[in-house]
Structures are given as C-alpha cells and as structure tokens.
Length: 155
Image 1 (cartoon, rainbow, N blue to C red):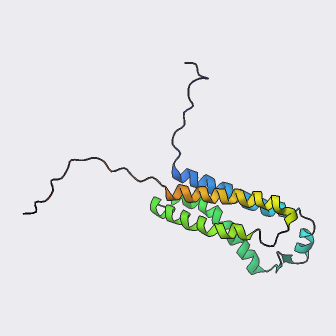
Image 2 (tube, rainbow, N blue to C red; image 1 turned 90 degrees about the vertical axis):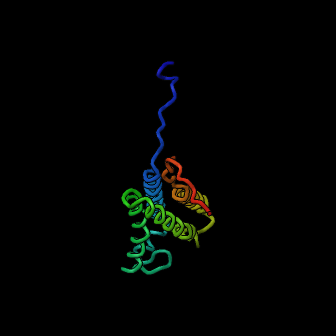
C-alpha cells in the first residue's frame, strides 16, 4: 500500500479541545458580526451621536457589551482548565444562555439584511448546538471489569 492510499491517522479529539475550538469559533463569529455591522449605512453616524441599537452609549452599556463578549472568550480557557464535571456543566449552562442572546441579536433588524443575520446567527446557533451536544455526550470513564464480588446471602 502506498503512502497516498493508506488511510489518514484520525485520533480521537478530546472533548475539551472540541469545546475550546467551538467557543473560539463562536467568539470570532460574534465579534466579526458586530464588526461588519459597522459597515451598514448610518451606523457610524449613530455611534458618533452616542446611540447603539436605540440605546444611549453609557458605561453600563459598554460594560454589558464587554460581558457578552467576555463569556465566550473565558469559555475557551474554562473548557480546558476546569475539572471535567464542572466544565461539562459550565459549558451546558453558558451555551444554553447564549441561544436566546444570539437570537435576540436579530430583533429589530430590517429584512434587507436578513441574509446577513440569518447566516451569522445560523452559524452561531450551530456552534452552540455543537457545544451542547459535545458537553452533554461527554464520554465517561469506562468501568473496568474486575473480579466479581459474591452476592450477599439472603438467609
């Protein structure tokens, strides 16, 4: 068998690495969607006037935006650093909470931009679904087959 016809080595990817990669992808999409949103006509004028999404730009609003972007960034490291049981729960909770946040990002947008938001939100939701599935189906340590213990007598 030649080198080109042999199957490629495909070792099993650790769940932690899958989760960290998915959160990284989610974070990039999340940030880039916000960045490309700035290209829409009138958006920069609104920002210069102190308004974002009908909200006045304030320290509280900016702190909220930072918190929303910080969670996916922190999930990259937490997915790798937390103990498995805790990481699983934190991933399930964070991904579940980001589903409505992600959908909310399309509220109030015009149909003219529907393809942009459908694609971006669709991809973000697919990544969140992948995170939920990966965390939910996190493999457990196999039980080693040891010597059988005799059953207690019922006499």
